Image (cartoon, rainbow, N blue to C red; front, side, top):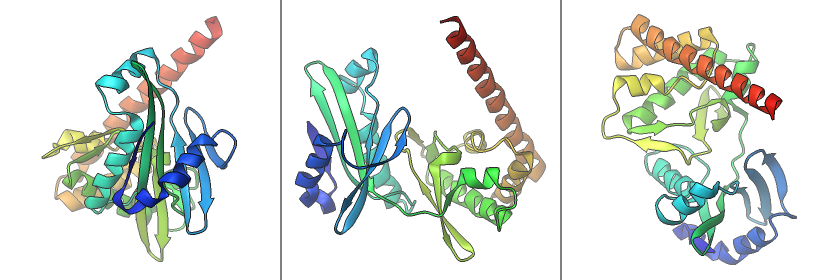
Length: 251
């Protein structure tokens, strides 16, 4: 088992190793889809451990020799985001096991972040207080990502945690393994980065207006491009779901 810890948390090595050894039976499960996330409690620390699903045969070799694992990328991306002043749960460690020529299980460990809501919550609750102000501040947050050359490929409703501080909102990213980094992010990449967030046209209009205000560009062009990217993504998403259902039916 390869283990890498942040400088501040190396003293937790023994405790975290024990958590990994008993992961299947201990901890409080908060998510169990493709990957499993559990909370583990210590006297002075609550931490999340994310156990990634075992990769397919090709990735077992690719992660062993050619690519960084999802756990390693999550850890390194979190450290990079924090250096750039972008909120994310503090990274503690990543662990991964190899078996001969094959990559095995991997785990990403971070501090547990208490939050008030996610971006998804304001999609489903159109009466949420200060909803449009949250969207405007979220747009400024996304612009900050772009100004730092950060393209968050999983910029989707469940991956932004929101902490409320009066009339100010702090946005914190999770599920960090898929990112690209640019020296100068071009316009199309920036606008395309909003496509997975919502299919609500009014929400897109609010974000377009704020992005136009920040950048000094034409609102109508930004809205047209942002909404165009969104509708194309939604069409592709629903078509893919349709094909998956058909494949399941014929199995």
